[in-house]
Length: 116
Image (cartoon, rainbow, N blue to C red):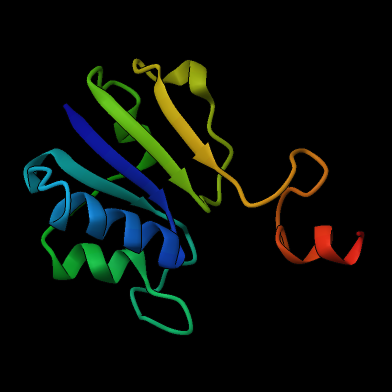
């Protein structure tokens, strides 16, 4: 089985770290798809790209994932819309921090609070 984490920030880094260090998932079967804006530098949030490079985790493109049959795909603050029909796997999960579709995009935590 293969495992892909697509996304950014602390949530993606912490999930990847948990997968490696707590679940002891084989690193050779893990890869990441990083957001287009991930510079590879930790700022106020951790960089998934940096964590992957520091821990010898393969970085792939979204398109690389389409043909992997035994894949678990986990989207955590990923910056692209996933077209599930392109994938051979059915094990796809999207974690989003607000009610969809009302609060999609930026400020997914702040806008629901502001709007009560």
